Image (cartoon, rainbow, N blue to C red; front, side):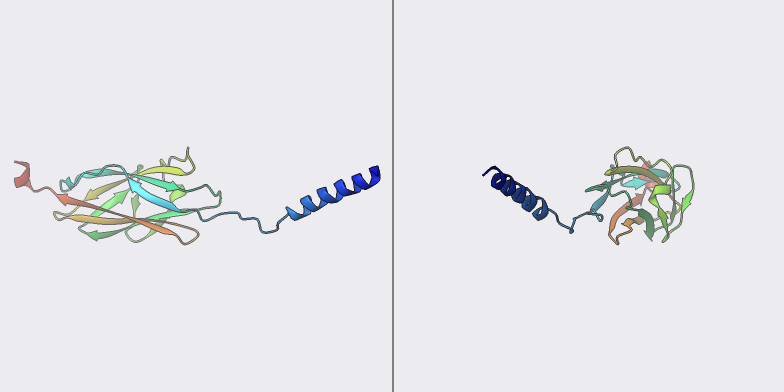
Length: 153
């Protein structure tokens, strides 16, 4: 009787152990993310430099996820630089991990700062984009009206 009990318990443990094994482990890599910024002023003077603080919010952290950033100057003329003064090139991408001052303390909320200087007397509009190595891309548009000298007086 005792042997039969041990055999039943052994079979039950074996059945539970083997039925819980699954070769299809679901490891998520392509977490969704968003791109946003802190408050931005609406008007700037020609030749004025403004700070644009970006927030990359991710749903989760996958160590091999890589992000690139770029921008497109849609209207006006100007230049975008990082916190060390290096220029970003219009319509080209740069690895976000190489961005000076990138705050990675919180792996799902990364913060970085870019600067825009208008070299035009007309309205400026830029489209910033971040894309990951899984093909996801998020955009954020920024526009600045140029203050006229008459409006300042």
